[in-house]
Length: 429
Image (cartoon, rainbow, N blue to C red; front, side, top):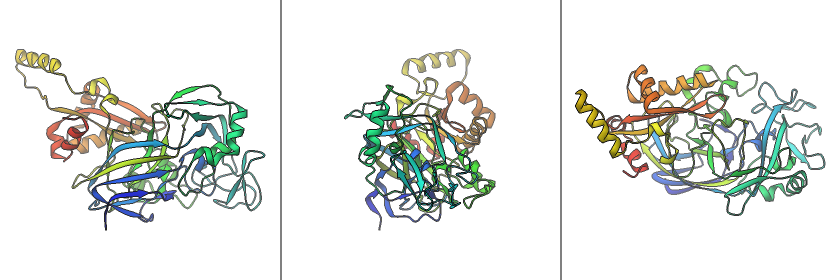
């Protein structure tokens, strides 16, 4: 029986049809999700078949393939006292084709071997043969601690990084079961004394794909690594094109107070939450950022009959780029005067939405996002290009290939698609 409030605390690495639903939330209900640091910690843990761990999927009552679900992010509470991250390079011999998803021990050859943290050397080692098995090496890493009110973080020196490593579990405060070793146990401290503002956001959040894949690869860029891959998690190009749900967006505006409208790719939707970052700039140019344990509160609403190719974002108004904001009364008055002078009719009822696109690179991701806008709106491709150019923008979510495309959209289209009430709700209209 569906519940009004569901607590998501179980953790998985591979998402898709084979991942069993652990609970069911009612249409209009709430999910409270507890998640582990989801990126670098799984990356250094060979048992994890993904670059992420996320919450096990929650079924949404009444959600079927061909519908969509509105996921309203009400609150994100950071729980970790510290984290670690940085830039990295893969270590040859410790993976089979993909260092994120197919880790392999270079000593005994075991795929996804059990491992342990060697705190004397700050390395990850195979339990079977003691070989070092972390498939990544930091090129410039840092350990960051947060202020008690979670307004800022600072990167610490080597002495503090080693002290934190000794108490990694305490500083990470996972709070839920998972396989990953805390990345803080590696005691990295190449970048010292940097201040950063805390602005929590969700990097991996949405619905389950219609094909099994590592949770970190549920997008058109990382998913491309699975096509023709030499390991058991390989998928076809057709599956990647038609069955991914793009939950791994890494769009920095996906935080408290915004809304994701996500496609339902399997019956029940399968909502997963993870990869919470303390802060992230557009593009996530380092490849990774400050992953933290968190508690996220999400309200859920089913939108029947809204078939989407990928997620639509309804961001906080302050996160909308200038050209895509609603017109003010002053601007509309000037536009009406021009329309009267030149004898044309103007469309005044417009509201901003953002379409997510993904692909192997930013060009392909942009094309994907534009095509999704065409499919959603029914407008001509060339018209979409023009509208985005003069009444919107294209912003980078993550390199190498996730974008979100803003456009002022006629409200009659939003009403026809069944989301006008959600957009108005988001902007207090």
